Amino acid sequence: MTALFDAEIETTADLLRRLGAGARAAAAVLALAPRPQKDAALVAAAAAIRDDKALILAANAQDMALARQNGTSPAFLDRLVLDDKRIEAVAQGLEAVAALPDPIGSVLADWIQPNGMRIQRVRVPLGVVGVIFESRPNVTADAAALCLKSGNSCILRCGSDSFQTSTALAAAIGHGLKKAGLPRSAVQLIPTRDRAAVGELLGLTEFVDVIIPRGGKSLTARVAAESRIPVLWHEDGINHTYVHEAADPEMARRVVFNAKMRRTGVCGATETLLIDRSVAGTMLRPILDDLIEAGCEIRGDTAVQAIDPRVVAASDDDWDTEYLDAILSVKTVDGVDAAIEHVNLHGSHHTDCIVTADPAATEAFLGRVDSAIVLVNASTQFADGGEFGMGAEIGIATGRLHARGPVGTEQLTSYKYLVRGTGQTRP
Image (cartoon, rainbow, N blue to C red; front, side):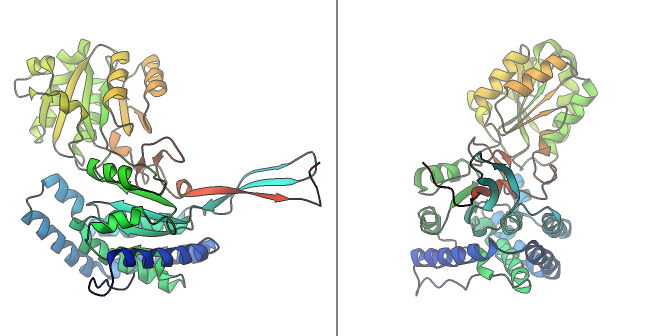
């Protein structure tokens, strides 16, 4: 990791330029690094995380204590906290990325022109990736692993809430880089909580090639307003589960509960449940019983309130809210067309699901819902790069350019054309 930052002798702007210069130099090395060297760094980083578990847990305890002191929500604390199991999952994630194919140098297309020139389209790294994220410290390891595997260096800006934990994780990753003979500046965590560092990073056009924000509306709004660097968007997870009239009742009950309550603070959690009015009277009450018994607050339209008096009235804002908490908005709709219209109007183009046994409804939902991930009969909490077999992810991209859905190693690459001739000239 980078040297400690002393605000008395180095400004935040100077700090970011120093990090940027180091990242640019490291990117040139990583672009040519062979797969065994990159994989060795990841495996060594996983070992260092296991060896440093006590230090990482102690750092996390400091972050948790400050978060509790600030009165943060239980869902926020769940995103922030680490334990033995989660640290082991972080280490295993690094090893899983090491086991993935190396995307760099793969030939995407290969052809020969009539004039005899051979043209190849070959996958290459993006260069230097700036990642700005909030409370989840595991993003430190996920982002570092994916960037390293795809031949990119990275500058990481964590939220102040996870600063101590992310610093400890980044130090362990630095040990892995050093052991494999790769530059420590390949993975750098900005060593200050100063909010001005975000603005400096967003203007570092000389050194940074792409910015990836991972957080809530305030973060993405700031990035949109200030970034002078191309952005790979990761916005809110206002996700829907739609129970169609042809859904199996027990499947719907099971999928909805998992989609909302498995972990309420992750971006793949369902925030709005839609259900066909024709079956709401018979199918909805057991679903609500499960959710309310588990501590979930239900905010519904008038039809939902009529079915269960424990439901509070939903406001117009509820349909556009990412709760990241044990709160669910529930709305009745008149068929698949109305459900699709609601999802496309109020969703964030992240992840949406239909529960149905009807093939026509399935195809309509899959074809017309404009989201990065569209599921049939499966929990929205599968919106995760690891669950897609990608080892890990930096986030779920909700834009339409360059990458969409889980961002893994391939999504952190571009390509260039290699043209081999034998003396051809253009007439």
